[in-house]
Length: 197
Image 1 (cartoon, rainbow, N blue to C red):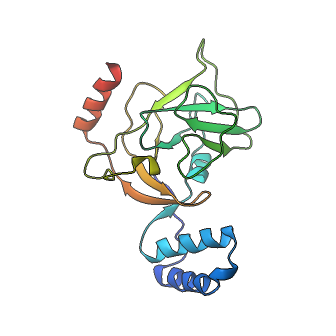
Image 2 (image 1 turned 30 degrees about the vertical axis):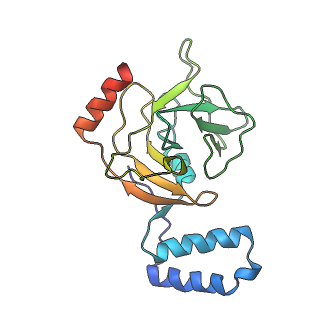
C-alpha cells in the first residue's frame, strides 16, 4: 500500500517554518497550531499523511466498497456505512452513528466523500465489515492503544489483512505514521483462525 506523505518540504525548511509559527504562538488560530504541529513532526523526521484523503484517492473496489479503511487500533472489526448525502462512516458498530463527532479518540470516523455511490447491494447484506489488523507486540504501544488508529487495505470478506499502518491522529486530516508493517504468515494464520472461532 502506497500512501502519499506531506513531505513537499525538507526537514530543515520544516524546522524553520515551525520556528516562525512558534514566534507568533500567542496569535495562533487552531489551524495555525495544526500547521505548526505538522511542521514540527516533519522537522523531527517523522512521516505525516492525510489518511482520509488517501482513502478517497484509493477509491472503491469492484463491489463498491472502499479499498482502504481506518479504525481505532483497539477494535477488532470495522463496519462501513454509506449515507446518501455522500458521507461515509468507519465505525466499530453495526449501526450508523448519526450523532458522531470526530475527535482524536473517536470510535466513529465520518468522511465526506462527494460522488461516493452506495455499494452494490448483496442479497440480505446491509453491514459491510472488515477485520482490523493486529498490531504486533513489538510495535504495539505499551498503553493507550485507543489513542491510535490503523489504516489498511480493507478485505470486506473473512480474509485477514496484511499490510497496515499504525497512526496517531493529531489534527483534522493530519496523521503521524507511528509504524508500518507486513503481518507474517504466522500472525495472519493465528488471527484468521480466531476470526472463525
